[in-house]
Amino acid sequence: MMHKTVQCNIFLEQDKKLLQSLIEKENEQISMQLARREKAKADAHWMKLISRK
Image (cartoon, rainbow, N blue to C red; front, side, top):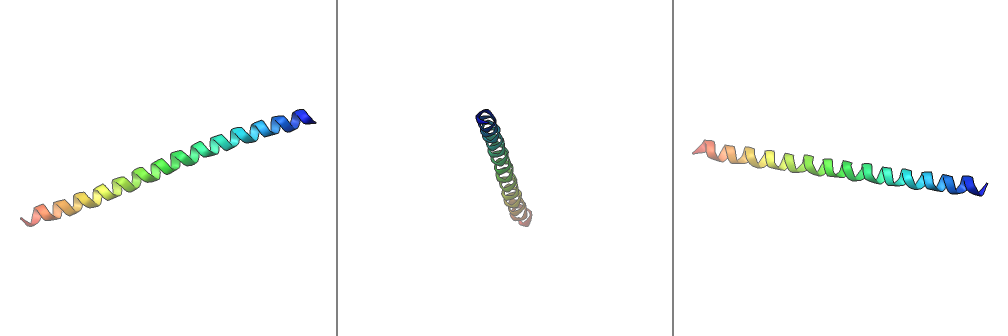
């Protein structure tokens, strides 16, 4: 019985690490998307300024 408990805890810890890694990667992707969006907005604004001259 004790062996199964230890094994279960090991699996849970592995799952926790995997989920944390996935969350971290997702947060990085969201951050990159936001940065791209902000750059696109800045580029569009700059192009509008240039086209008015």
